[in-house]
Amino acid sequence: MADLQLTDDVPPEAADGVWLACIECGETFAPFEEVRYTCDDCDGLLEVRYGDLPTFEDFEGEGSGVWRYHAALPFDVGVTLPEGDTPLHEVPRIEEAAGVDSLRVKHEGMNPTGSFKDRGMTVGVRVAQEVGVDRLACASTGNTSAALAAYGARGDMETLVLLPAGKVAAGKIAQAALHKARILEVDGNFDQCLDIVQDLAARGEAYLLNSLNPFRLEGQKTIGLEIMEEHYADYGEYPDRIVLPVGNAGNTAALYKCFRELVKSGAITEDQVPKLTGAQAEGAAPMVEAIHEGLDETNRWESVETRATAIRIGNPVNAPKALPGIRETGGTAVAVSDEEITEAQRELAGEGVGVEPASAASVAGLHKLREEGEIEADESVVCLTTGHLLKDPDAAAEAGNDPEPVANSTEAVLEHIGAESSSTVRRGASKVLTSPLALVAGGLGVAYLYRKLRSKE
Ligand code: F0G
Image (tube, rainbow, N blue to C red; front, side):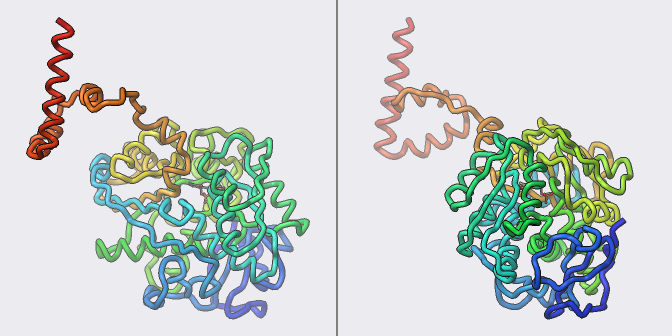
């Protein structure tokens, strides 16, 4: 099992108090001297480590968004658009339906390219500049490629994205295309695309910016920092639980790292760490399987399917960091059906919060775990929504109301909407009818209806 204990010993390889450590064998490496994604000795996942860990007071200085937290990051500024500072929405109707003490929704879809990936890319692309590479690459279910393309463009670097053909939502491909990424559509799934990108990276053909790259997760840690600060400011306490959609398990790993660092610095105590709770789609749920069956690692699901294409992933590469995160914080993992995901997407939209399907898995997971009694009524919960509604316009259109064709006239529209049937409309209309123009329009409408009735006789 991975050793995720943070130490005080700064190894000689550290640069300005920053180094890389293997979570499996403990080997340490200089952070930027060479390009490396996994351990040279045992191929274990790497983690960025710091000699000095900040408390909340250290974030009170200048700056905004992700870079306000530079004391917790390897640089003071990155390639920025800027990102972070996303809303922590109140959702009173969902809160009531779920029956929890409090519920907030951290909407990461409000980042510059519409997903949380921007937080990782602002750091990752900065590191790419530091190590001196010129071609950036990723495999993606869509959002990583959109973010990489935009941040690569911002940093004036070449970007290459490998996507599973036919399985990426329209908004995401449009973003990668316009931000000038080279888009390679692979006849395979995301996991196979990632295998290829890892090969390319190992051959020195490109700098890999998937969440396997430990620096990506440093930026994503700031989701946790924002949640903790804002929740504390609003309620005088930290949330009991964070429910989040899980694909490659990068965010789960990043949040766990955020909390380990806060505990180590003394900013929070062990029992103030929120329970990390992952939600996956039933058709792509290797993390849920591993948690429920007590496995040390995930099984690779060769065949995966879900409407939530962003989390259509069968081999979560960050599982060695994320499984301990879920277990050590007392969290759990839950699988939800595509129907439950769509229902939660509608529920969020009904509160004005527009998200893509994968994002809604967190709210669907909350409902399911409440029904199962796993989440208790007295808990304060934050659900993470990871991507914007417009990322997947087809899914949104399918989940939402159908457009209604109507003839090109006010009378036809009035007739179609059944203007007499709704009290709200009548109240509004009585106000509007005080204007002379509205009186004329109203008169015409009545005349039209009268003619219609007459013609029926
Ligand atoms: N939600 C959305 C909207 C995503 O795009 C992703 C991952 C996740 C959740 C899962 O996050 O991997 O940190 O567990 N999307 C990646 C991509 C795989 O390529 O855009 P995770």
